[in-house]
Length: 277
Image 1 (cartoon, rainbow, N blue to C red):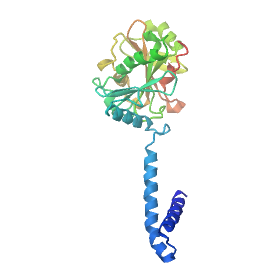
Image 2: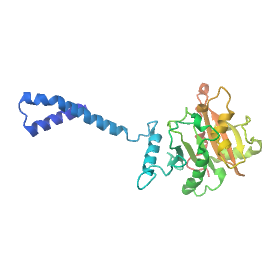
Image 3: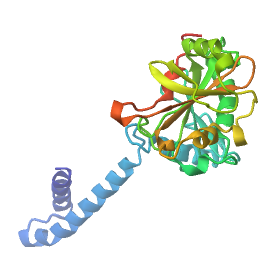
Image 4: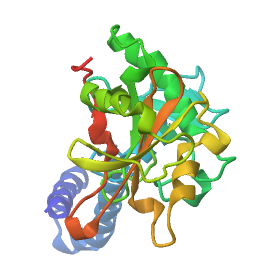
């Protein structure tokens, strides 16, 4: 319909401009006019497709690219992100909830299943996420001051709606913190060892780290990957990191189960408006 309308307008315009009243003279212009209309509409459609669409599974990746391009411009600015770290290869952006931030790589990494992020020497995205959460969350909620109020999470492949790795950063639900602290002396140090808690109606295998680092062998991607059995896949896993009151962290993992219709989403443990703090 757009093509027909544009075609008619151009014929009328050309006829009036050149006084083409002879039918045979006008006919020789029709095909070139049609080709011009097709080319113009194609250009319009391509330009429109580059507009960011939150329903597009590449929305976050396109946003990251915009942020990096703007940070490399003159003057440098992180828009539409909050922060761009070109050296450490990540950006920080607002999430969709009142007190939620996202940490995303500047590299194209689809999600938790990417094998390159599960090596002990991989870029420590969780460490960066923890440091950024401690900076940004108190700027919105001043009552969030203690490490056991913070939570980070990444969802499984089945539960996510974006194909660019993103770690959610927010508060942790107080009910989750209370259960973790009540069971603190039972939670194994340094390995998962099949300790299970039911949190927000789903089961989580939990360990804790005494070390305040989430790098190298303490990288949660690495720890979870090392704990998997031969039939398990990283794509099915979802991970949460919660600050531990006495120092260190709780590392939680849960697994999607197709037979039960369960798509693992540790993000559900987060309090993304910090209302329980």
